[in-house]
Amino acid sequence: MRCYRHCWNNEARGNWITCWVGEKQNEIWRMRRDGEVFWVLADEFPVGDFVDEFPVGDFVDYGRRKKNCSFLLLLRFYFFPSSLTLQLPSSRKSSNQRVVNRKMTQSSVDLPPKGGFSFDLCKRNDMLKQKGLKAPGFLKTGTTIVGLIFQDGVILGADTRATEGPIVADKNCEKIHYMAPNIYCCGAGTAADTEAVTDMVSSQLRLHRFQTGRDSRVITALTLLKKHLFSYQGHVSAALVLGGVDITGPHLHTIYPHGSTDTLPFATMGSGSLAAMAVFEAKYKEGLTRDEGIKLVAEAICSGIFNDLGSGSNVDICVITKGHKEYLRNYMEPNPRTYVSSKGYSFTKKTEVLLTKITPLSERVEVVEVAGEAMEE
Amino acid sequence: MTFTIPIDNGDAVKNAEADSQRTLYPYVTGTSIVAIKYKDGVLMASDMGGSYGSTLRYKNIERMKAIGKHSLLGASGEISDFQEILRYLDELILNDNMWDDGNSLGPKEVHNYLTRVMYNRRNKFNPLWNTLVLGGVKNGESYLGMVSMIGVSFEDNHVATGFGNHLARPILRDEWHADLSFEEGVKLLEKCMRVLLYRDRSAINKFQIAKITEEGVTVSEPYSLKTFWEFKAFNNPTAGAEGSW
Image 1 (cartoon, chains in turn brown, orange):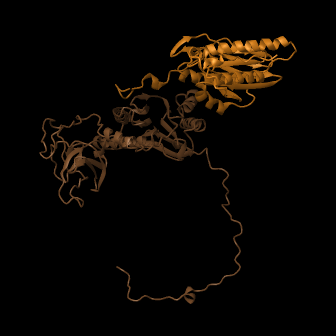
Image 2 (image 1 turned 120 degrees about the vertical axis):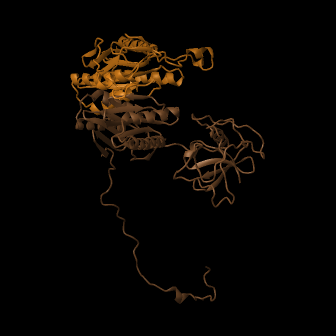
Image 3 (image 1 turned 90 degrees about the vertical axis):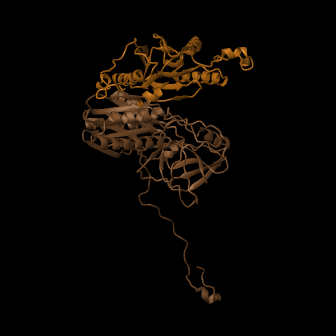
């Protein structure tokens, strides 16, 4: 089977590569990196021109060939007796080069421009929605997250409730994410978005630390997050409070889903942000000590927990100072389960046993050995 | 003799012309009101701004008025509807005085009257676009209640309307306790009003605080609160990162 067109997009970075494959023009086959093939859906797609041929086994990322990469795209595997090649439009070089497939119709296909956004899947998503597929709901955090700068550094705080509409999906989740040994980030909004974005930037910071040999700075994380969120125009619904202490001192920033940022002495985000901000505005002053700062952060989070329905359960706190950090998971648990009996359960008297008599079945029943029928192997 | 409850044209729903007389949106609005019960009675605070959409059009609106001998009414929301309510209450109190029987309407009664008015108007899809706070003291008992534009009414030890719901209520829940003295009460209210001043875009720095006790109602002169903007982080937010924002 020959692959006629590879549309690479964000999916190429993940485990899937969508290819237009097959003799029939309207088949779409999706291949996973480990080689398993799924036929996903049929749609009316014009067969594209294939322009470049990449040998079997090369890893493709955004259309660029990468050598010496640990991920090998194993295209020659059990499912395909014949070898498979991947073609990619050569938009990297020049979009004028096109080799037309003699078998198929000659239709020109729009190639995504270099860089920028890729909306390749929008048509397919619309089609799926028309056919009745309901998009899966996303898990929002419905949160109170806060940060404040005290005399030695930064204190971040968060509640621990994750909501899915009116239901509490996770009553003790972790909203303070690790970015670097000296930088932590609280996330509000869609849980997957905050996790993915902070994970991604954390990896990028690690690579950057390898390259520069220095500790990461908070504005580096800020700029990486800001760039990513802006390029997705607010669709990545992550509102973050980023705090850390680097060589230039303590920093605290808020980042909004559309990509704008603020630098503040104290900050709150999430559905409980107004309740927490009320506490901060009333009680914050400069030069707080560590204990005063922790007390104020805990008070602000409690204000969110008790006055906002989207926040609840426990208080997490993270204290970052120069060269040292403390992650106080479940620092305060103001919503314990009460009225749990310490004795456990005790059941009332069971049914009384009057008499026990055991009769082996072989006395009652005639057992016939069927000879010659050994178990099948 | 019964008190007249204002009824508007029953044909309003059918008559297209009368549609233009139904309240659809508020125009000139007042922002939040915060009120608490204290040892001697009730304290209520409001700012003096009237916004016309996003413009701060009027800066001298008194949104708290004494009603009769025993009560104080504060309103947030549409100012013209507030003035209409004051006219109704005026009539109510006048009729009450005409009885001349030594009894006077207390805060509970006025609150009940307002609840009926608001709920009836809402049922006709022509609401008075206000959230009202009614406080008063009669026969040594202090009373503090709230009515919203759809007729939701309740009484409590501390109330807040508008943005005060989100910003002032957490502070009041934490720090209110019974038998506050006058100074403590004023300090608590000022704390709430200061947070509202920082974080509510339609608030202005010109407040009135009103006090209702057994002796009567006093509304203070307008005054302003001190604010603090000298945080180091505000002075140079991009220290260590020239050119960022």
